[in-house]
Image (tube, rainbow, N blue to C red):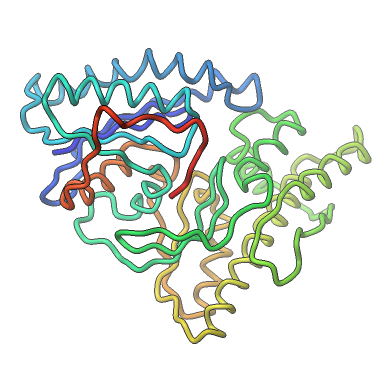
Length: 335
């Protein structure tokens, strides 16, 4: 089995994945939402300190699960990019310590590739080539992926999809994380009241959410005490998802013009848990004859299970890292 560690942002997580069949044997994650909610977003220094406290606690639980016998573990996998450098380093320090103390090889895993493999947790077989919409608090990307390589086709020019939900929730005084709160309020909207401008309605294959976020701010200022938060949440979610769908449709049309089929299209990342977005993308993929792949809701947000699933592939290819040279990049690279 492989022990995997995830600490790229604010979720401390460890997992054990069986190499022969990719079965998830152990998985524990501790969220930090309650500590960051007062700030309306992640405070890196707080996140780093919490990882330093919580990763060892989860490791103790993992040892108890194995009755203290760590001999079945054949490699240590850890997220090394992209992410917050001060939180990534906490996971890397644990990974290096375990690698040295247990004399086990080390696997460096790309966090975004982990999200792609969240589709195949507990599955030995994977589906590639694959087109992917990755939406999270840090990224909004259209990707084309094979087992070996991932290519970025489109990305946000400013805020990410998930980040825009967090910032709108903060403007509305709703708390953090914003995605689930906005989605819940939107579901309770009884009447469409507000209309917001959909960004970048042109043929460019890029995303942008800063203008939409500003439109929400202006509407809040305009309405004052008369503001209906349910209706504005609905208008924002609808417009943000319409923007995503329009750009994905542009991608499908571009591929069609080139005579290239998209047999499989997937949505991954923390913000892919948004059910309204899932419904809209499913309608789109059906219209183009493409099959939509979705990660289980429990594995949409950051987790070590997805890191372990990638690690099995890397292990079987023998793609091990040199412990002396493996470090965290000061900048968040992607692939």
